[in-house]
Image 1 (spheres, one colour):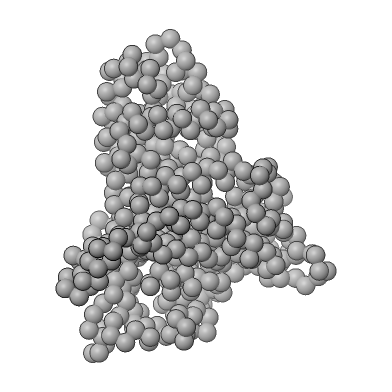
Image 2 (cartoon, helix red, strand yellow):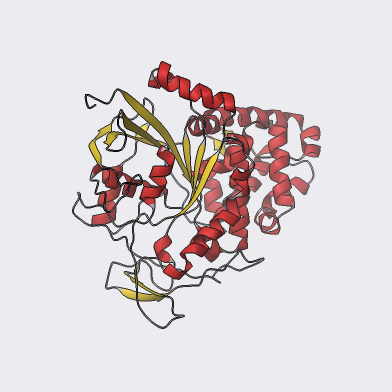
Length: 455
């Protein structure tokens, strides 16, 4: 710390996102720009502040370190977008900003697997209440009801036993995964506690190899009638549910609730490409998450937070979420003429999550963490971008080759009332990250997100 900087301002930042949202790429780009800061390429503050004395610190106890160096290396030398977050990890750094006269900054970033968000409905609910919540979702949604047919058939049969119930539910969870439905709960069926993710396979193989809950402690939702008629099964499942919630779900949400700021990533291009079902699923899961997190702060909390900065050491200062940045990533995959539409779609989808919460500052950003396409000039209505294709027409990954041109879909002014998978098409390209480690990738608006969450 510089002689004239008498305190450290700590920001705990949680980053969450659902299917394919690009959290790891976002964080890797952000950290690279902080470590090798160029105020002309990564602008902080209205005057373009400079970052100096950047230092990477050890993560907190019991937290794995976010593998920033390894993720950047994979982007550069293997042409590989980082794998999905497979465990809870943390990145801690400290730096000075030229526009902060008496304080340096400590940034603690929590990278948390999006799969766990589907379990947030467990918090504050008994086993019976969670069962009713899940089954109500299935009953009222035709795609979920179709995927869950094996489970519903078992429940409708005469006196189903525990093994048959578990098998039917696991087959149904496998169907949900293969149909790209994000509400898979317990989420350890999709991402187990050791960080091993389910891979594409037959429903039968997935059901036999994955665990619905904890090893030796599987459970499923049960309807009220079956809970009443099968007391033993209901009691066993309730005990396993409580153990799972305490071991897997509560630590995840405690980490989020301890943050000052939250980045919520909503992949607008993927939602448009996947159809209305994916949109509805993501929106429902985010609603469940916000209900549990309850971000915002009362006047007394605001006063307490400022007093804590003066009188309490950093480790004892309370934390709660008072800022949320809603981020629409992959801005480079849409035509520049559609960038405002992308931001408008983000606001239309998630704006109500924040607008009725007192003491919560929310902003909306369209972002490209790594700009990997470029605009090709053409006729006025042409939407042509160029990049190095990542997959062929069949969806198979191909080695990096020559740059190609893509015609990209036009974004609608508002979310359609109904649309099918494949109606909107966007390119999937290789990441354009310089091999030189002190040269971060081109980005759009990542700097604005950081400026906002640091407050």
